[in-house]
Image (tube, rainbow, N blue to C red; front, side, top):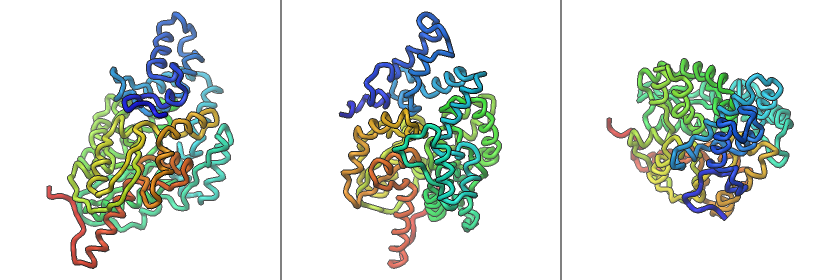
Length: 410
């Protein structure tokens, strides 16, 4: 049975009912480690490592805990200290960080452009063999990455500029989401700009690779600096990527004014549409909607709900907590059972029971993967729902001589 509405803070506790797997339990373990009374081996403590093991990094505690504990950040710092100077242990950790998507963690965008879907699956399977759950299908690279597709896209000459982040997950695995966002933004009067490679920093943070994450963030700021200085919106589809820019970027690069500028202009597509008060056409119908954890913790989940309302979509949101996938967590053999237990609380049953013509709408790669694997239903990104509404409106306008909605007057 799901917990009450106010008890979504620790998804792993929902599965295990173990006090250790709560924010309080993990915080107490860290306290004892720093105090040095009961736990005497400090940062090397295996007991604290066990306490951190089932933290999914969902960040729900940051907003739901009465004292706003950010356990995901504490876990990152602990892992960085725990494995510092221990090369073999650190290598095992890095293997774990790459289980889910193989080379997507570093250079995945290039791999996605070079590998066809079947070759990509083999590459992922080779990496996934190092501790991957056999029950979990491995993600397949798309035949053509979004960035390669965008090279042939005709960008509008005018319009309000907007940067669209080609995050590695949508770029390499679900380019149809970024394609839909590009077409939709163009129809709405924006001029889409796609920058260079966007590193997948979130896995590095989750596994405590803080030094490497800082280096990648410096490169990312260098890429986005000119747009942030011109106050161009920096829009992403993957909440775990956008939340790095909004939540961790200025903390990891505290002396960089450009990092602050990037953070101030980074947003989800839904946040852009609400901020600019964009007029949207009706899509109608019903949907099951699941908001990504980082949207709820560090971004604005209500913006997506508002977009759905403006699209006249009646939606149910059956599970306010984490879907249980959490990046590579649900791909790992030792965590697969917990991942599925979390998803089966309410989310997967609701998706299975939804009407055949109901849409399943998500915003994150992890949520998409968990739902597709566990229900057989194929979710779509909010950007795809938006494009469907605009395409339907355009078809109607072409028949009736109407106009496609555009940006609200500035």
